[in-house]
Length: 370
Ligand SMILES: *[C@@H]1O[C@H](CO)[C@@H](O)[C@H](O)[C@H]1NC(C)=O
Ligand SMILES: *[C@@H]1O[C@H](CO)[C@@H](O)[C@H](O)[C@H]1NC(C)=O
Ligand SMILES: *[C@@H]1O[C@H](CO)[C@@H](O)[C@H](O)[C@H]1NC(C)=O
Ligand SMILES: *[C@@H]1O[C@H](CO)[C@@H](O)[C@H](O)[C@H]1NC(C)=O
Image (tube, rainbow, N blue to C red; front, side):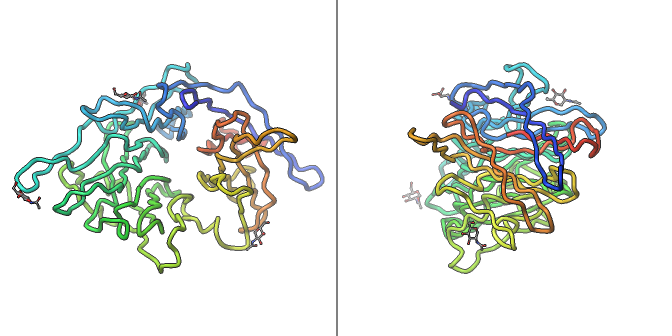
């Protein structure tokens, strides 16, 4: 049941008796937000700070099947702004896009250029200081061909200045359609910002599902933005290209993390292996320095993880694995945090909140939301 989403805030307390790291988890008065029934409210989540001078946070919650006010569009999906602390019904839709499908003239008749119904806007949402990005990985467009085909290229929207300026960024809406090109890209399946605030967009479907990662500056996306420029290339954009055939099916774009698309997960001396097939290990990833030792730690979500208890049927509860970095690219054995609700998809979204109460690293207290 996705209509009720519980933002669970854990405080992690670290202590190192006899050099062994251990920690306790305390569930501290969880805040509960509610969205429209059937909207998948809570599918994605991030914390948002309107300005860095204030210590006030709010919560952005994706609901990829929510209906919006866009005329003629069904279940476009939406991202909600939730004041924190806040009451369960205090969330409001953010107007990233109020428009209908754009139209073009083909062979004398007007046809939709794009298809925003069921596009899963809000499947991903990320913030960086005052910048926000949210994406619709199942956004389709008509392609440049005369015989109009529908390609799931995906699209993203950025917002700045506390939601007063918006621009669309659809890096796979190009002259390179079809599965062998960028037609099945599904840009925005995963998305993040680098530490410097540059946008990183994962498109797992490009080049026969090899996947692709694009990066662009938010200022460049906003400058000179126009609704009419459908095939716009953003100045300074960088993207990975098609690799050798052997990379097909690697889903490169699915599990990128800040600054380090997949590299930290797939190679190097560390080795993060999912415990179960089809648990969707790597569906979500977050990188943050949890214990304040100066080295980034890694959280990996496996939302379809099944818990097997003695003599009972396995229960799909989801799991989050926490890997502490002990030396550069060397990690301790993971600590597993297991969900409590069957089909709750615990671990679908992970968002590091950092040092909210601004106590520096004293007490080594960090917060994360799942
Ligand atoms: C969205 O609206 C359509 C048509 O009015 C309706 O069939 C559908 O159930 C609605 N979906 C949600 C998630 O509210
Ligand atoms: C363009 O329109 C004409 C007349 O309606 C039709 O015969 C022709 O097949 C169309 N061409 C394409 C490529 O759709
Ligand atoms: C930022 O935008 C939100 C949502 O529209 C609004 O509730 C909030 O008051 C704004 N904050 C500031 C500092 O303007
Ligand atoms: C990764 O870990 C798994 C399970 O512990 C092990 O079977 C596998 O050999 C390891 N792979 C590498 C490259 O170390």
